[in-house]
Amino acid sequence: MGHNVGYINPWGEKGETRIIVNGHTGLPSLFEKPYYYPWNNVKDEEDLTFLEKHDFVIVPFYGGFLDWIIRAKETTKAKIFAITDIELNALPYAKHEALTKIVKVAKMVDWLASSNPDFTPLLKAVRKDVVEVGGWCLFNEIHKKYILAPKEKNRNLIAIGCSNSGYNRDILNNLCVFKELKKLYSKLRGYLYYVHPKNIKSIKELIEEIEVEDVCLMPEYSWEQFLQVYSQNYLAIHMYSFRVVSRLAQDSAALGIPMVGGDVNYANRLCFPDISVDPFAVDKAVEFVDKLLKDDDFYNEVRDKALKEVEYYNRENIKSRIIKVVENEEATQEIQE
Image (tube, rainbow, N blue to C red):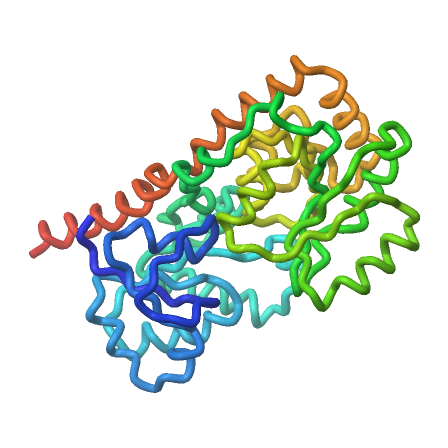
């Protein structure tokens, strides 16, 4: 669109780098030449006026960035487009001071966008003009390369969630569902993704204590490598209780992989409404997986619905939501001038 966009990158190590991934860091790639500022390079900068050279700067709107945003707004004329990535289930445990800061920054930034539709009503009670981005953008041309027809897959291969270095991501729920399924289908193999090397030992100990067999721990991949490997699964289980944008649910839907998952996630409810369950309802999850494995018509109905509904996260759709508010602001400024 020709906008000069800066981005405060919470994870990247380089500056001028385009990151293609379904996540917060993928949002700037919607624009022609985004400039990525690694967080470690700018968090302690005293003079932030360099931000003013951009039409606007996209900044993650969550805890560790709030003080920095306040400083940027109080000491520069930079336009800040804050996009949320807050785990809603953490809000009830936040200190009053943290909640005060969230409200203050929400009112202070030039634009505030919600990445999770479930967060939008609460944010709009603080600030009426919240932009609903809806989620992380999917790069459909990448997913489409790895979509496999059900007949091309081994029905015994099932994804059973994901892990990472910081949280267990409801691994207990997923393993318990898989254990019950093994009683019905002894040949099933479950694949747990994004297992950090430092967690392998503890996860294996948990698997042994639960007494479940045929669980495969999959390493961390680049996003596209992950899609290629993940696409082999016939279906997925992710009893996710985190109230966030579920990237695993998004990728599952875009690859046409039915996911029996926690209903607290908007992505699960949108793309898999017929098989979303309470994240602790082991019996109900087992029931749905059993039906998917036995009933091809049901499986295909769930799959087709997911492939259709996931277009909500299409890159162009999310881009239009962001651009619309920016261009409306620019048009208003031109009229005022």
